[in-house]
Image (cartoon, rainbow, N blue to C red; front, side, top):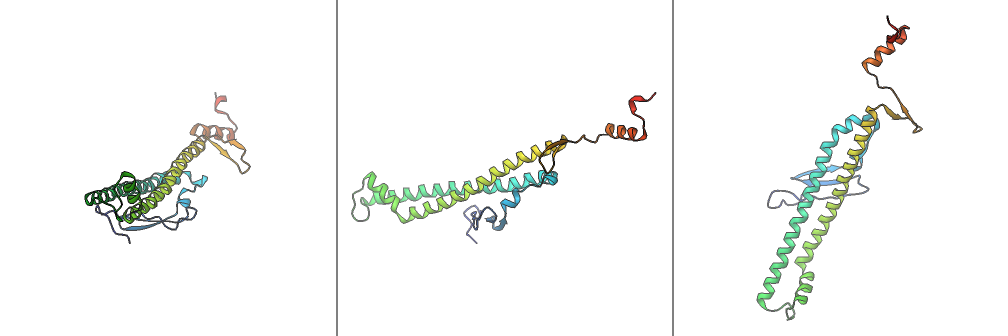
Length: 194
């Protein structure tokens, strides 16, 4: 398991990403195996269940995204500190390795090629990749939410689609509608009563 940083937060690791079907995340010293593709699926007959689970799923993935963003920011700060430290060190010595005269261009080239800078830059790229994946997943959950709301509205208004995708309207069953149907079955319409 990766080492926790100063604040006790274990870095997020996204591994085994294949078509968003397997996402392994290490967060707060716990390992989560997630399946975003499965979490994003919707079944029209279970809209209520999906509406109930949507906020918690969204919150979980949004939290992961926020932690990944924090990781990128921390690594960027670390890169800035490493570059500053190396810059100060070599300016104090008055030369770069290989007795190269210090100029702004030579210092920039040296810092970009320094192993310490390269290592942190590689970590930043990995963290940015993780952030991009999680940002895409969060956007997908936002679209899912919008779709669920639209489907729930459509269900509540009585509009459904059959297997041929031809819209049909079913009258909502209300207490008044039930009374009218009962009266019609008994042969008397409520409006014809004396």
